[in-house]
Every structure is written in C-alpha cells, then in structure tokens.
Image (cartoon, rainbow, N blue to C red; front, top):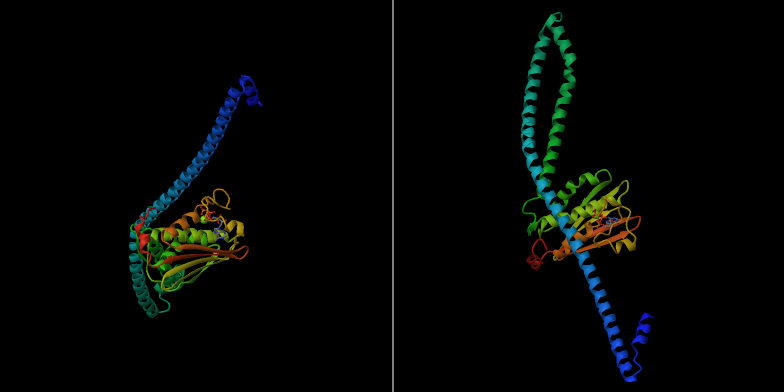
Length: 329
Ligand SMILES: Nc1ncnc2c1ncn2[C@@H]1O[C@H](COP(=O)(O)OP(=O)(O)OP(=O)(O)O)[C@@H](O)[C@H]1O
Ligand SMILES: [Mg+2]
C-alpha cells in the first residue's frame, strides 16, 4: 500500500518515463526479494553451523571427561596397588603365624591335660580359655583370614580392570581382546548394575581385533549403563560375542523397558534423551555410533517396548584403512 502511494507520487504523467520508472522499481523489488532469500539461507546456514559447533564442543567435552576419568582411574589403581600388595603379604604371614600359634596352643592343651585334676593352674587355664572363647577362635580365625584374602583378590581384580580400562596406550590402535575389554568395563560400571541386573555371559571365542580399546570400552560403557538404566527394578543383562571370518560382533541385551519406534528412530541423534534432566545428556549413543563408524563397523539396535533391547556392535577384522584416521577424529 505504501509502495503504491509512493509510486503515485513518483508518476510524472509521461507514459514512457512512468513505464521505465515502473520497470526500474519492479526490478528493485525483485532484487530485494532475492537478497532477502539469500539472507534467510545464510541465517539458516549460520544456525546449522552454530549447532554443529555446539555438538562438537559437547563431544569434545565428553571425550575429555573420559580421558580425565581414565587418568584418574589409572592413578587410583596405581595408588591402591601398593597397600594391596603389602596387606596381601601380611595376610599370608598372619595366616602362617596363627597356624603356628594354634599348634603351640595344642601343645599347651596337652600339658594342661597332664596336670592333676585339682591343680590350681588347671582351673585358671580353663577359666582363661573360656573367657577367650578359644574353640570359637579356632573356627573363626581361619574363616576371617580366608574371607579377607578373597576380598583382597577382588580388590586386585578391580584394580587390574581399572588399569586395563585406562591403560595409557589404550587410546592408540592396537590388537585387543574385546571379551576382556567388555569384562573390565563391566567391572568399572558394576556399581550401576549390581543392584538391578544379573549378568549372563555368553562369550564366544574372538580373535584379537585391531581397534582403539579406550574408545571401544567407551562404547561398552555407554551401552552397559543404558541397559542398567532401562531396567526399573530387576532384570537381566546378557553379554554375547562371536566371530566369523570377516568380523566380530558383541551384543548387550537387556530385559528393560524397551523403546517405541519413534524413540528408536532418534537415539543416535546428539542430545536426544528421554531421561530426566541431570540423568542423561543424550550423547552416549551418538558418540558410540561415531566411534563404531570410525572403526568401519556398525551399531545396530533391536528393541521391543516392554520386553527389552539388544544392541549389536559389529567390527570388521580386516579394516586396515580405518587406521589411517587419527584416533581423535
Ligand atoms: N537399552 C536401552 N533401553 C531403552 N532405551 C534406551 C536404551 N539405550 C538407549 N535408550 C534410549 O535412547 C536414549 C538415548 O541414549 P543415550 O545413551 O544417547 O543418552 P542418555 O542415556 O539419555 O544420556 P547419556 O548417555 O548422555 O547419559 C535414552 O534416553 C533412552 O531413551
Ligand atoms: Mg546413555
């Protein structure tokens, strides 16, 4: 309307001039519309770029966090190793000393039997033995020592798993035993799982796979934590693996709540989460799928709402070209 009025005021009354004026103004308008469209396209491009930068930044943060956790774990494992070592050796000595003391005690008991029944020392010894509950100690001390040794063995396993999980060379391409990687990652996240799920292992024999173990462990960790979080109160997580000539596969199967198709369609999107704020960032699966792609493999999902979910990682055995990509890309 304003433009029409403006046109009116510009009209000269000379038809030829007015027509040229009209064409000129029409041309300007078309050019302005074109510029507006271009601007709009640029704005969309910018928004997409900003989103991509944000995504990359979060992924970087996540991998930095993983690296920091790895270093922390390696440090803790190293520090725990020393005391575990001397507690273990002390326990061994203690067991043999206690054996010797019980042997001595048996000898004294024979001596006690040899004393005449009315001897005052005999009554005193009997009283002291009752007060010390020697019979109970004889039973309980070996049990305590055995349990302590078992506990210590468990600590040793956990420390080894932590060390495995965060080996300083784990961020490089190397030949790795994926069953072992899965097992040590399971132990690292055991706390998240143990109250909710029993774990069933159906490991097949796997050849060593050329991969970046720290990253593959990160995939295992994300899938294991997701599986545990999908189980509300109690369920089962099954770990399966197998190999063919060309590839190895690993499955993490849970009896949790499963996913409807609309959720399944979006799970690999960065920041897609159905978990409450503070519980999930929605990055676990997008990072995992990037890692598996970097290894020239595939991350597949099969899920039934109310029944559970199966994630399957397939990695090629002979994907040398994958190695040409640096670890951090
Ligand atoms: N095993 C599973 N069972 C059911 N739903 C799952 C399972 N694994 C993933 N999901 C769904 O996929 C979504 C995305 O998973 P993803 O691991 O990427 O993010 P998250 O677990 O929500 O958060 P984060 O891993 O960053 O802590 C989850 O919020 C959940 O809805
Ligand atoms: Mg997750």
